[in-house]
Image 1 (cartoon, helix red, strand yellow):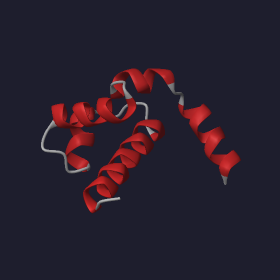
Image 2: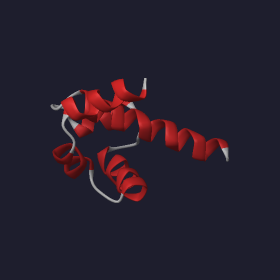
Image 3: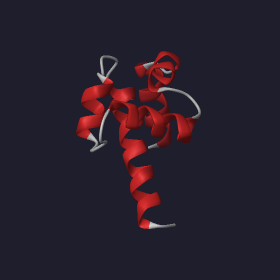
Length: 74
């Protein structure tokens, strides 16, 4: 795995965690926080890795369900 691919995965995991942890995440703030050049860059990256937009993903995953899954893995 290249260093760039590794960084891409880590940033994506951070985006997923933030979206799952807070139901009121502004995607422009998330893009800035994770070092994307702008919000459309975050949206393109998200869609290329998960085949859905962050908004669609957020509407399909509830925080309670995410927290339950995390506890079961730990």
